[in-house]
Image 1 (cartoon, rainbow, N blue to C red):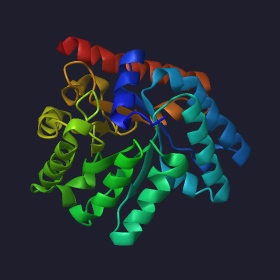
Image 2: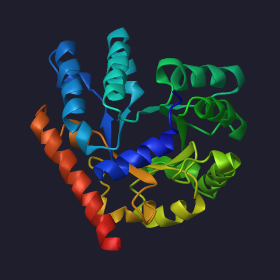
Image 3: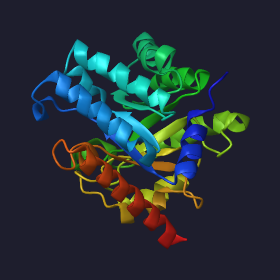
Length: 277
């Protein structure tokens, strides 16, 4: 049975569980005494928080840094998430030309990762997005393309109208899907816009009407849930807000603290939307 489009699955879960939170899972080797402890804690946080979040976002760098055991853990995380019917955003920020882009797209958006979403870097040119978009569409997945990232240094390269140019290309790609858009009106071509730019969010939402938005920066990077309502459609869909360290390591390795932090972020995001309506 074909998978529903990623954006539709994400929106349906958002509404069913009344949550706009994305759980970032970034296991840091220095926080643990052994790989076994790292594995157990990462999976415990995933299972404990699953009912509080709209999706999960493993940051591939942390798994790659652990070598083969880390990549095995990544596959285990994805397998558990599938079992929990939790949409997966693979945060890899891949981007390259030609056959290399095709290989990246095949690796992370098809086969065992069919139906997942992948973060993509567009700064080698818009033609390099096409392989990722095509494979995502074929497999019910999505891409989240960097538009305006959460780090302060983003202005070095993303200012001067560059982010706007990327956003307009994503709108063009999203409009191509037309009748293929999910029932939510969202396409398979999403955008990464930092939650650390709260005053700009409503403008980005209007500029990219078909794009699901991924907003990193909640918690450790300083973004506040109450400032983010502008990223959402009136019904409370269209975006998810990612918190990683602020949940997984809310209080050391205390899983109950992670759950409490996830509950708090979820409730604060919902309150921000309710106050807007």
